[in-house]
Length: 209
Image 1 (cartoon, rainbow, N blue to C red):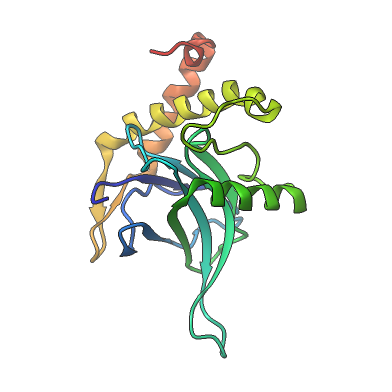
Image 2: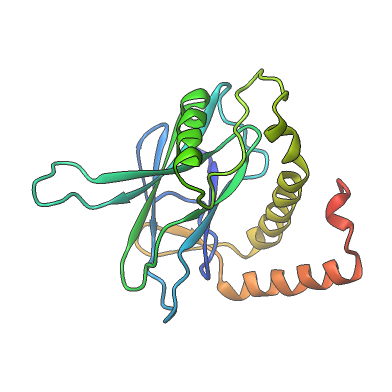
C-alpha cells in the first residue's frame, strides 16, 4: 500500500493525502495542524482517493489518537467510525483544536468488524460520520438503510471527486517530512467555480460524467 489511499480535509485547511507516519502496511497516522482560526471547526472529512480499492473484505477504521496519560504506556485511541465499500467518505467530529495538534489514525481492518463497531456507535449516540452502512464485499443490499442512502452517497462521492481532480494540480510539499499540501486559495477557487456551476447547472452532479 505504497500509493496514497486516503484524503483528509480538516475544516478550513488544505487537503492531506500523505500520512505523517505509517507504523505498519495497514495503519496510517495523519498529524492535523492546529487551526489558526479564532473559532476552529471541530470536523474533518475523510475519503478514499479516486480509483482506490481496499483489499476485499476490508474497510478503514478511523481513530482519534491522543497522547498517553501519566500512567499509560501507549497513546489513547477513540474509534470515530469507518469508510469503505458502500461508504467511501464521511465527516467526523474531532472537537475544537485551536492551538493543539491532533492525530488521526486510519487502520485497514476486516469490514465486518468495522461495521459492527459503527453499529455500536450508532446505537449509543447520533454522531457525524457514524450514519450509513459499510457493505462487506459480496454482501447484498437488502436492508432498508442501505437502500435509502445511495443517492446521497453518490452525490458526496462526486463532490469529493470533483474537488480532488481540481485541487490535485495545485498540490505541493511542505515541511521537513515533505507532507503533500494544497494552498487554501486553491480550495477557495474550487469552491467558487463549483458554486457557480451548481447555480447554472444544478443537475450536473446527478449525471455520471
